[in-house]
Image (cartoon, rainbow, N blue to C red):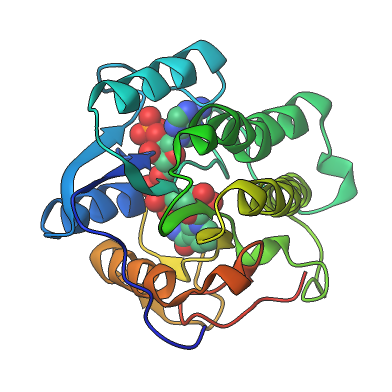
Length: 237
Ligand SMILES: NC(=O)c1ccc[n+]([C@@H]2O[C@H](COP(=O)([O-])OP(=O)(O)OC[C@H]3O[C@@H](n4cnc5c(N)ncnc54)[C@H](OP(=O)(O)O)[C@@H]3O)[C@@H](O)[C@H]2O)c1
């Protein structure tokens, strides 16, 4: 991250996971951003209802993007799953469970992959475009000293690899594109609520959204395929 790389004005911003703390805050900020002619906010509660484990609903989202007639310039995938419906992050290998692992991968890795499949082809060939996927620092293998959280860590590491492949493919057709995985910092949300910040500072969702948009604005095409934290620093794989 070195300098600012402005997006062309008059385009479309798109957020998946708009019902979430970070996704919702991103939508609020993008709606107030004069660079965008419109913002599409997709969630399971919206119309079309978009569930990232349901490819048809992602295809419907892509059709809604095309129906605007606007050029998508910024896409952020802010969906994610850590706990819920009786599933908690694994503290030990004794907690490993095939169905729980499959659910983590379905939401955290395969879901964003299917969004890439249907939405990345809609990005413009000319001019800057940005595709960001919310990953997590927990995905970093080089920083994983304490273990645990097997499914979350592994599914987020998987999405990082998927983003990197997509960045290479997108870069061949759109020279000014940026496709990255992002860590938002510890953010107050339903996802993070049961867990502490581990000595790190905790951000309100609006602050986290502001940080992420600043990071994305600062990334150059040469940064594509990377994994960045909320300060714009690269995270080790
Ligand atoms: N908060 C943190 O400290 C933190 C730290 C590192 C990384 N992250 C990442 O940041 C992202 C956003 O998390 P958050 O903190 O904003 O959590 P959140 O408020 O719990 O939001 C999670 C979002 O994911 C959506 N979602 C879950 N499963 C889905 C599915 N199958 N289809 C469509 N949407 C689905 C939820 O939709 P519903 O409203 O329909 O459930 C919600 O919009 C996640 O990828 C998370 O891993 C967060």
